[in-house]
Amino acid sequence: MSFHLHKFPLLSRSGVLEKLIGDLSGEGGQNCVLQLNDIPGGPKVFELIAKFCYGVKIELTALNVVSLRCAAEHLQMSEDYGEGNLISHTENFLNEVFGNWIDSIKLLETCEEVLPHAEELHIVSRCINSLAMKACADPNLFGWPVSGCYKMQNAGDTVLWNGICTEAKPCTVSEDWWYEDVSSLSLPLYKRLILAVESKGMKPENISGSLMFYSRRCLPLGRHSNSSENVNRVIPGSTISVPSEVNQRVLLEEIVGLLPNQKGVTPTKFLLGLLRTAMILHASPSCREILEKKVGAQLDQAALEDLLIPNMGYSVETLYDIDCVQRILDHYMLVDQATAGSSSPCVVDEGQLMDGCPSLTPMTMVAKLVDEYLAEVSSDVNLKLPKFQSLAAVIPDYARPLDDGIYRAIDIYLKSHPWLTDSEREQICRLMNCQKLSLEASTHAAQNERLPLRVIVQVLFFEQLRLRTSIAGWFFVSDNLENSQNTHENLALARNNGSNQVDPSISIDEMRLRVSELEKECSSMKQEIEKLGKAKSAWNIFSKKLGFKQKSQACNPKVSKPCSSKPPSPPQLPMNEQQNHINGDLSN
Image 1 (tube, rainbow, N blue to C red):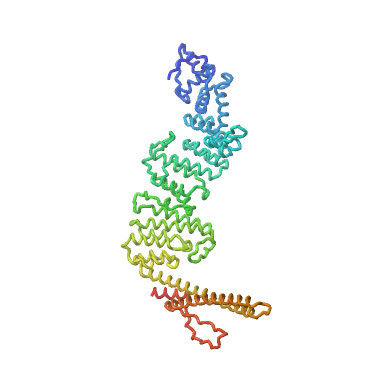
Image 2: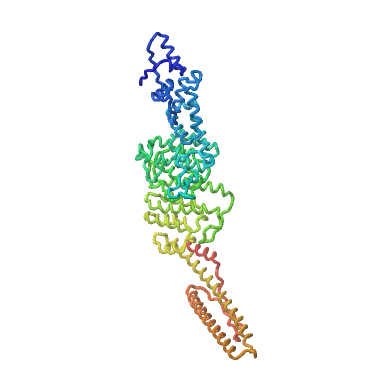
């Protein structure tokens, strides 16, 4: 672009133009033609500079002040060439802009157009420090104009006070008010801003939240997203387009490096989304390793749908990446062992959840998650038995209060792999403890034809032990009820005997009323005793069919006939000895 200008207005304001015009004028030329190819900001900025030299008032904004400041420095428009020159004029305006959040964001965005000059003049660093200070402070205290953080109330919420309409008050500013504004920055500037707010003591949760917002705006983090479909896609409501696959890979690796190291700060769902995207974009192994370790440190917070990562390897054997989940689980076990130390695991009774042991609650959640994951991937016919076993064997036995989950996974695997041999079926069934199956699972396993015969026999044996224990407990309770009923009856008879003594002061009508009440009490007590006797006789018949020895009845001291003493029953083995005896027979 050509500009036809006078010499004096230019040389009186710029040291560079004074030198160039002087050199050309010394050669005797009337018309000076200057080639200015390296002016920061280009022709538009030089047009504003020319107007300033002619004394025309120019309007400084957050969008043009950086270019004007750099161009003024390049042309040496200092105070030596006139008071109130362009350098001081733009510098004063910059100091005013730094106090405004929205204008500072615009200022930082325009620095990319003249980045080398802006870096040399320290405009970028000053702007980032200003933004970091405002992001770390509370805007409710200082009243900074923040974009989108003050949400006014509805028009219907206005209140009339003495006929005067009061204005709606602004709502409280949340801690994420600055996420959307800084997400429009380029990656290098955004990275520098995040490092600045981190150095100023911002909470890791807020840093992680900003990184999540920035990632969702620039990366395809959905479960079914495809990187090839997102290249050059324009985000709705903005002029920013999704970068190419190479730029996405660089952006993802940079974001992973900026994530806080504290456990639980970044949600596991977001970390698994980054890991899935890293595999799609073929990120570096170090990037994937960092994400796997971060997920492994808080695996108890993961969900099954997020753990189903598609297999993106070159040799695709299974539908989902089993090896990745194996590495995540191994890292979780290392972290858990390091935190647990030498503390022994809590002993939990069968059928009880580990509510009384808070340290084992995360491990129990991980065990449940792994069982659900195995049940989901076991239907894959390409899943080999060693991979299934290695993934299931990582979970310790004490972490599963019940083995229903691993039994369901084993059953699905056996159903999807009917060609397994008998030895392989027995190997996979060793992963579960038949004694820790619930009643519903035991009933299903006893009728499951896919299980080996040895496993079915063990399930039936443990069910018989449970039944015997339940019946023995019922007899113990029923005997206690009978003894308490007899004691209550003796006390009632003694009380009645004392009350049957005739008091001459009591009339005949009162005596008849008391006798009728006693008769009602006796009849009701006899009915209760008869019901209890019928129920116990029925249980005695049932216990004889199951092979239990009926307990000898206690002698009644009121009865004159002597009690018939029965020969003692042969001693029975305890429960654990019976179990060992049966297991020995099965192994033989």
